[in-house]
Image (cartoon, rainbow, N blue to C red; front, side, top):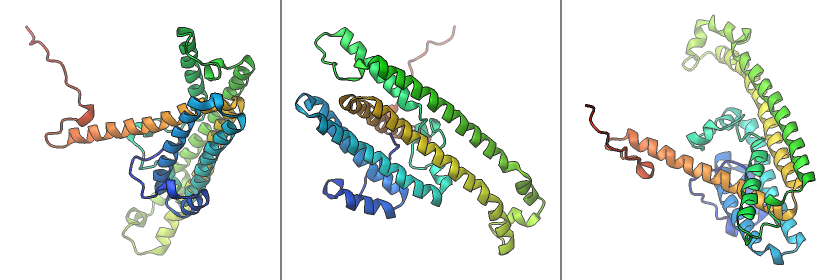
Length: 295
């Protein structure tokens, strides 16, 4: 469950080994990692769908290996993010490769961890409805067949995750207030700091950078904790499920974030076209019905 970019990647994952990919990811900018991550997600999605179609003849080991492989990709993603967070935490909190739609639903630089639980409940409900509505639908091993013990564990996970989300949200709120602390306000009394971009005084720049450094360092810690919670929550959901149920969940997870990104980009293109001369809104154009003139 991670954001992606719609730009075309120059890396052909089909001809790269896992070691080669990890080596290249380690030294490239994180936005490039997103481009390649998009291809990884699409490939994972196809493998997961194929496994659902053929799982009746697949062994439990095959299912576990596929789930493990997909989860490894999530771990690689967050490992790369950790390095990028240290290098540029502000960019990672407000990534410019996401759509405006994705930006609107960000929680501390990414998806809200409890989204994974809500996704599980939504998909389970839909698959249960499909089973009840059509006796011919074989949903014996999907998310519509969650046991009572599984539901109890999911509920416990949701409660723990909500509590941790609240704690992190409060930490961020408290840290955001430091933007107006005495260190920052004290800089305002120095006329030279108003023109720090044009000044040649290293001492003035040093004062400004020294005041900003703890602000960014604090964000690094909060964002890393948020990412840790995101990954732990995802792993916990998968651990609760059987191998084939985990495959169904990961399909929904991957589809959701790939499609939200895609739809968000389309919306951005639509809004951009409306701002251009003679713009018609592109694929999202909506023709308003004619209104009758007022009497």
